[in-house]
Image 1: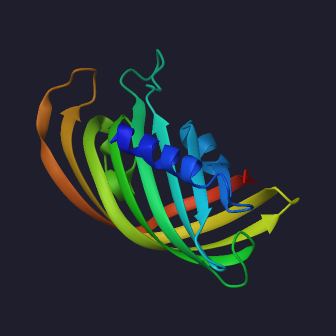
Image 2 (image 1 turned 90 degrees about the vertical axis):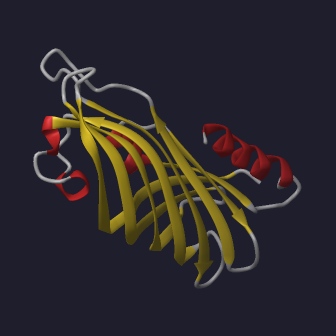
Length: 194
């Protein structure tokens, strides 16, 4: 799936090099700061009020310290989204429909909404997928630079194997959960590259 994400980014960049003000490169500052995850997004203009946004993040690191052996939030995520702008693309209010797909390996993190009460006692390794709707607003700071604020609500299905928390802990079993709630949240720095 990592190859697929790179192929999507490469396709956007190579097929849109001749279009003025049609491609925006972005990074979600909030997502990066909270989860320590490098992330990028490309948004491509389709029509006067429509765009396609593809965002992704990759966090391969363990967060463990001598105090918290086995703590980790390793994951990768891709979120394609179709956006409709109320006035003009890349400016002002927009509404969107997005999808989510992620693979994760989370250990010793308290995430009761996603993984249940007492989740910090275990390591969860699996995948998540879902859909949602988005509302956002873009504040243009200059001709090429903007801040984007967005929130998405929707559904996600989490399928995972549950392990004892220490490294190489024993497999306890496989579980699935349905989640309804926020599926996207962002304060994003955007730069129009074409």
